Image 1 (cartoon, rainbow, N blue to C red):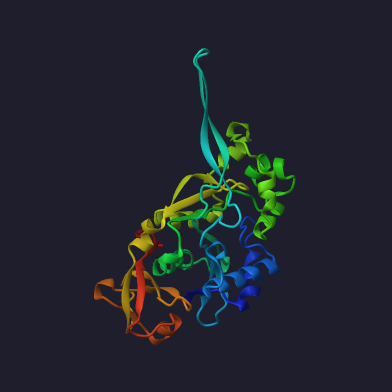
Image 2 (tube, helix red, strand yellow):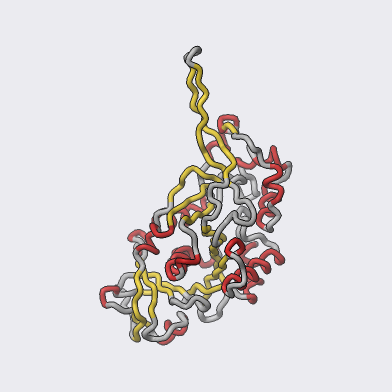
Length: 343
């Protein structure tokens, strides 16, 4: 049984293996033991209530309840940009006009932005390729919404998610080659690694402070602005089905889109409900639902068939143990989207 749970100290070795499978481009999951160990520690301190909001971040893993081995990771940053600036590019417009010459030109530009400061961020979503069958990806991504719904007061009004932009298997990014390489004088993967390991001061020091005219970029770079890496397309579709939208903000390194949504408009949060846990066997023809306990310290989430109209969630003894709940406890439940049920 696949279950979402909080990250643990013993997950470090497995997270390093996962980081080695990303192929680069996932800045928040670098293949660096010290960085990942610090990330785990910060998550544990967040759950313990030992950090101020500006430093809080939750990390979850997807594990098989039989062996507890982490095969996927997802995370939530509680409030970005309150301690270190959080940068992206805003895709906007500058108008150049002269009535005397009868000239009017509307030109697209990239402007350095901190507009999402104070937002909660969905990040660090990665699933081991060997487990990308069935609905594990839906569970990994959407379980965070049940946690946010259960503990709404711990998160901010707006939620953002940076999507991985276009790059090839060798780490070549058309956007980086046309923009970042001119200011940073380093390969894309090096800048990506430095950012992922928390060495972000260089961004503020070296990024252009004035708008960049998009027409000056290479055609290849222009084409990938706001586009996702092919392997990230399913993750984008999952978020868009929940109400997230691209609002013309892109990553400063690879040009990938930033998606955003107000927390109370997210479908899985808005439509979730609380039902008591009951003893019994679920029927295969019941709708498949995301199900999570309401235990902050021992949070667990999984996918189960649930007859919502019956007013309770049927759990076998092994399912009850995997969800770390007792019969009668309140469980948060929400159905998958229609297209996900058919996947």
